[in-house]
Length: 221
Image 1 (cartoon, rainbow, N blue to C red):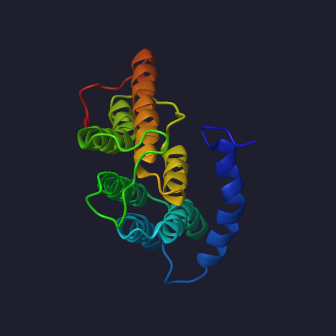
Image 2 (image 1 turned 30 degrees about the horizontal axis):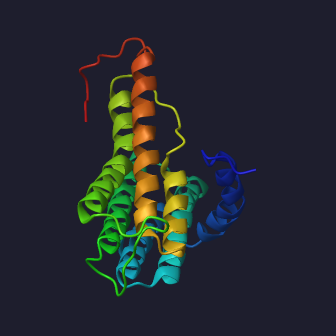
């Protein structure tokens, strides 16, 4: 059974990603950072560009490859013994760029700014442009906020939980939205899930006691 939080789905994917990463790690040309950049190119450039070009199936395929690369980069680092804070920072930053670019592409499609045909919401016709623009902005904002909340909480000695609207769940929603060519619906669901995840993390981190000896004024991002 696949849960909404994606934990069991993640375990299933790692049955494939870990062996693939171990094999890739044997090649000197393959590094965790290069895999991270490859994921960015596939998700933030190729998938987003294909969405704008109305190539929905290819876009979904490119985004799935990017999502798989996001599993592999960490596995490659562990297999090569090169895991580091630097790599984790780079991966996190590139992930945020992928989130922004793919959601921006979906927003532009839903607004009919690009593309060869109207992309109305199934069951609701074509909503006003301002509604789509606001929803797209909320989806982009929500995709960034959970990581930001975690960074702020961590800098202040507080932990945050995994949330149902985490990146894994959002990515699966995006893949389905691309496959069925329903960018507006994808934006609505991502906006709801991502902002709910951010608020959940804020509530839990505020309720928890900070780690002992932590100065709450240190290293605020």
